[in-house]
Amino acid sequence: MKLVKYFTLLFLLFLLAFVVFVATQPATYQITKSKEIQVPVNQVFDYVNDYSNWSEWQQFETTENINYAISSHSIGAKAYVKWEDSNIIATRYAEKDSIAQDYIEKDNKQTLHWKFEKNKNGTIAKVTIKGELSFKEKIYSVLNGGISSYVGPQIQEGLDKINDYLVNELGTFKIDVKGLVNKPATNFIEQKDSCNSKDFSKKSKVLLTSIKQFIKSNQIQTLGVPFVIFYSNPNTSFIKFSMCIPVKDEILTTPESQIQGNHHEEFLAVKTILKGDYSHAKKAWGKARQFIYKNRFTEDIKGIYIGIYKKALPEVKEPSKWETEIYIPIVKRKHKKRIVKDSIINSKEESPVEENNNSN
Image 1 (spheres, rainbow, N blue to C red):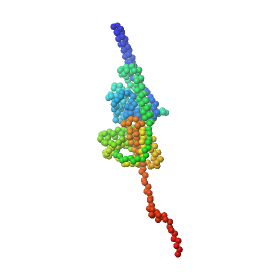
Image 2 (image 1 turned 180 degrees about the horizontal axis):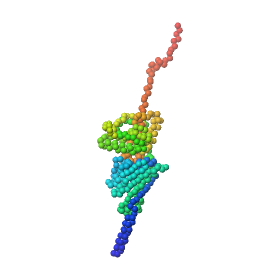
Image 3 (image 1 turned 90 degrees about the horizontal axis):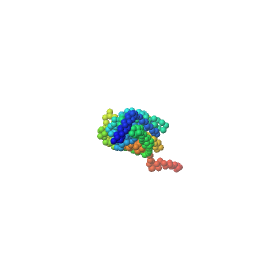
């Protein structure tokens, strides 16, 4: 009996010492991890800044079959992703090379700060997580070797996934010039905009979301995948364009509406297919124009330039599998009239004049 009391007392003393030890542990923590990614800063920033990419590399939750809810605008300040009702990551600030986020998991609030620094090989991506531990979380942390031992590897895994995606997925592409085609006439709805070329991907996504909401609200029947009409050379620093979706019937909208119904007639074009990320579009346009020059075609600068996203987000996640069709308008050659001379007339005209040798 005394032995039982002794071990009980010893256990209580150990438990008290453990509680005191846990209580004296720091309530706050800060963990920083970094990764060199061999692509430009803007590409890394754009990828991390867009919550539509979140499920591909998220590093905090590894449970399968999680249902994510993403804000209607998935990019930049006020964008967010939610899961399991009480968990949310929301962006407070996102500009150029820095992103600040609030990460709330049940009652625990943490902050995330991303920094993207340019180096000679591409980008140093650095993420810092800060937060506070409840007493229960302190116990878990102590029993598992400290919070850095299990949160740190999760953050590093996320950075590794981002690197794998950007380097391997974005680096794989193929360009195939198909030659001259007749692009059929099409009814479509469009929303026009303009932006710097570096912002085109972000701007076009916002417009596409807006048009899809318009289609859903008005129960419009569509006939294909989205496409872009470029009103200026897409390889310049500033782009004028329309985000479009083909529809069955020609749509009439009010003049003040940002979304308008439109139509283009059939036209002759050089068709090029880009398989891979949109960052290789400039190479695809360049290869198409080499084909035009080599075959002595004339680019119709008054025509419309079209990019069709045959395979793209959100249906296809991997950029290496994206497929974009590019159409550059070509001036139709006028057939030269062939002059055919009548054989009878020709024989008369081409007969030599007989000289009269009769003497008087």
